[in-house]
Length: 216
Image: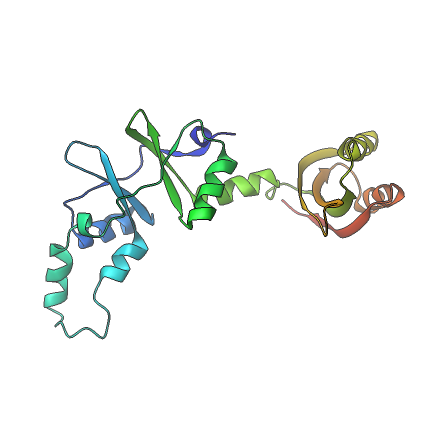
């Protein structure tokens, strides 16, 4: 799955000459938390987040009067607040690579570029939605978390056993286990009873960490 498959196309943007007030209003109207910033030629020159705007706004302890604050917010330009060193990705970037870039750089969104042109944005909200799909979070089934050995053929044996039982695997994922010799496998299965599935996995010598039936 690539960024181009799940990005928001035609993202909401703002001009670098816009004010804090204009940016905050746009974010509230569109229910978004960040805006790619374009110059008058439509080129990406920065990105600004809701946090940037709120930090730039006068604090309650400011000595400005209530009449001066709106004036200030209308005069400060986005170009003065935006991040100019924008980290971007392309449409053919794998989603997991984009997620790693976000996590490593502690950012919540990446503009998507095609030949120097802004064509989309991929955000942490998009990643959460993908996470829900990968783990079939909205589908009914039996969810098992198991400690499995880091040996070739282990997953094939597990999935083969589930298939023999008539189970339909809705989701499957692994993370590192307690040490390099094992993994934690999370699998969600439909069309098989929880008790039968647990028993079958235990017969294979697998340690069940968690077992539950999840509604849709």
